[in-house]
Amino acid sequence: MKTILDKYQLQITIERLAYQLIENYSDLSSVVIIGIQPRGIFLSDKIFAQLKKIIPGNTIEYGKMDITFYRDDIRKELHSPNQTNISFSIEDKNVVLIDDVLYTGRTIRAALDALLAFGRPKKVELCVLINRRYSRQLPIQPDYCGKAIDSLISQKVKVEWDKEEVVLY
Image 1 (cartoon, one colour):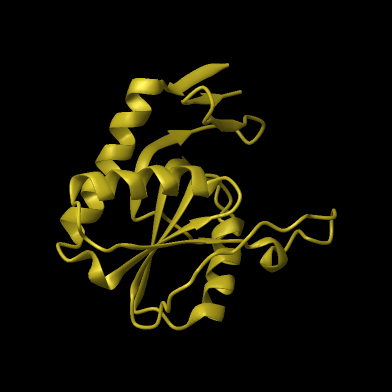
Image 2: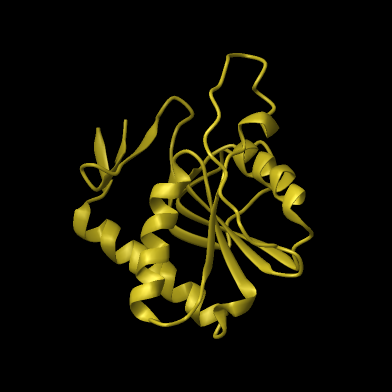
């Protein structure tokens, strides 16, 4: 077991990701943030809260999306769906998808498929806490990355939100 990000580093990383979004979009009215269920919403909740703290009074549209039935591995086991909560249109908006760990890219592919049910975005970007480089099965790369790591396929990256740390097993 190896700690990738401790509590202090995790907080700084979340703040940096929020500031990067502000740097790229001075006007967040054209941006919507969507956390990917189940694990990406922990990060998206924290980034959303950080954005509200940095730029109070600004309206930022924030939703959570379940991708269970868009996954290509649904045949292997029975999945129980999570809740989707997107009460706004993404039509012609800049969408920032947020997930905790980018590994094979299959979760993001499913999220892109699910996203189309809510309209046609102007642009879609990806924000992840951990980018497991060199393990991709699909050509997907993050636009915003907390930390990029090299790891073996046999290793697991776990974001432990209750302990506020990221660990490599």
